[in-house]
Image: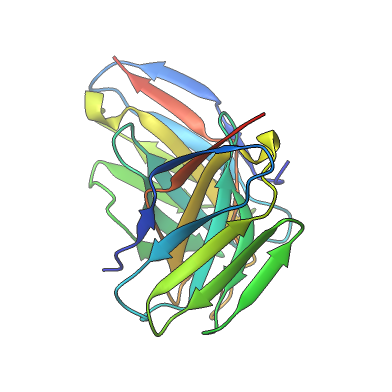
Length: 111
Length: 115
């Protein structure tokens, strides 16, 4: 059983602030680490999929890193905007791509 | 729009009843996944189908079953419904394959309310 912890549970930042959250997992026994963005009243949308230790991915102002040896992944948002307000979900995928999700970090960006 | 469709969007029913949720994956995707989002829990994996066959099972109750048809659409059947089954049910799809770790594309979800 894969155990996925995300911190913090929620985060309030001002527009323009940069922020980061953590996804931690006790075991490296997985195939891929996924980050999803979930806006209220919408469905989760994939941001990144990382498979290798040391992987770094970037999409605009959002980037993510993976450290399988120490059991964590970070998601960074540079210069937060109100439209970044959402819940950010981390998930571990096994060989069959079955995902185990963490509880998410709810980000609120104040204008 | 992810390309994954789910119907119905909302469903209200009574305890003891049976319902069927439907999902059509993105064009070309062979894998379909079902997830449950309850009020007090995160997204929980229920079951996965790949090209018509069951591939993986999560914490799916015996009262729940699913299938994937030759045209690759999938149905999730929930029977003997209880109040605790009220939740948002998501379907997702991915390309699939033996070593599939691709991103999953989520449908809009079906909100089930059991009264």
